[in-house]
Image (cartoon, rainbow, N blue to C red; front, side, top):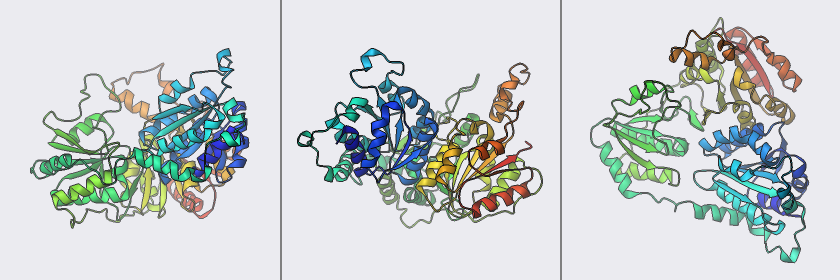
Length: 530
């Protein structure tokens, strides 16, 4: 048995089920070792950023780590953009990154780089496999690190010689039969004791809620999971607290019958205005509100000076246990949460504006859909319109790094077979990872991609206006996506995905409904007029 075989078998027996791969020469023994781990599904992607984005989608929907297989430092560098989003989403991922043979690194070969330094920009845990014999222990430790609260990125660097060297049976020192149990046990040791909460912190929050002053519960991350958000909603209903979530959540359950949670706006002045009257802000697995960017002559402080901020739970805490303790402390056990009423509009008619698109999406969104949202400027009306639509899950761009929509929808579809995934995709960001279309076709997943084609970087137009830079002349072409225009129908079909272009909301509704009725991926180009 080679080190690579031991590593892949240990990953499999530790619960890793899928590997999104874009390997190179230094990873050939790892590729061959997939034969030693038949329970791991190998999935080829044509770019590393597709691999990392797909792993993010898989991890968000399952709560379990996918693996990536990447080629040396440049391959990891290509994956960093979507690993940044995954880090912000607290998604568990195990990156396997090949490295030159240990004795060759000192020669500074052309593809040599500081892989560990690159990995640390997004990873909570980084380790280099020292020997073939240590490969199993390293793999189990990587899985345990990824499963550690609240979900993390673990990067395992594998020198070629550690992969191809033989593991002498009597020296191996590893009982492979117990690896899954051992990995889970290590993950549990890293987690806080079940139900452990900060009693003093819970009491402090309960006092704030009883103060009669305006109080907001701000939910993020794990607090938006089904059970946790129900508990938070009971507290809000009983105490009169405002219930909000962060602007960009990893996954939120929405639609008719779901808990009513207000989403904070995006632009900082709107956030500041929304929070102006809040006197007590309770963070539940959420960071304090902060603007995406700073602006001239505008404060970056979004909370009023008079606001008292408390944290009920954060990264290492048991969020559900903390909320359950708060329910008990406030007497909210029997409170009935405020829920979203069913409100499904008819499809719009006429040209495809932002509002008409949002209304049409709400009309046709199927029950149990997963929406992967990289709609950028069109996301805000879509979120509002679909609030009372059929029940669905919504995944956001958590870190603001573009190119996540197509890969995330791919990973989510593989993680949740039988559910229709809808990728709301801006045309500009679609060109960051169009290679994902090929993987959608190759794996035959049920993904409907809607390209919202306004033929420009519209968010940059907004920002120029907000900054008073409306007289820009020579820089204006940097926001324009015409000359030449992108033919997404030809692009998709060349990569194996059936596609069509529509220029009315009636045609859009029909195209989406046809795509939901047919298995496999489809792409629809919606020609926007605003």
